[in-house]
Length: 82
Image (cartoon, rainbow, N blue to C red; front, side, top):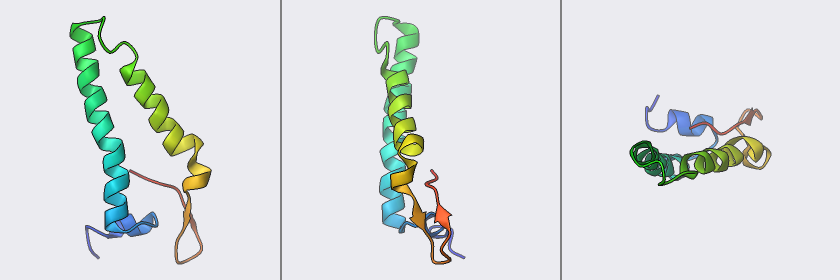
C-alpha cells in the first residue's frame, strides 16, 4: 500500500499523470474561486467566470467521460476521479 500511488493506479494513471490531471482541475478552480469572491464585492466584474468554469469542467469530467475511461489490469472500466 502506497498512499501516493494507490488512488492514481485505481483510476488507471501513474502518479505523474494523476498530478497533471488533478492540477488541471484544481488551479482553474482556485482562480475561479478568487474571481467569484471579487464578483461578490464588485458585481460588475467576472460576471460569468464561475459558471463558465463549472460548465467547462463538467464537460471534461462528465460529458466527455466516454473518451476518458480506462480499463484496469482486471479488465474493469474506471471513470476518472479527482
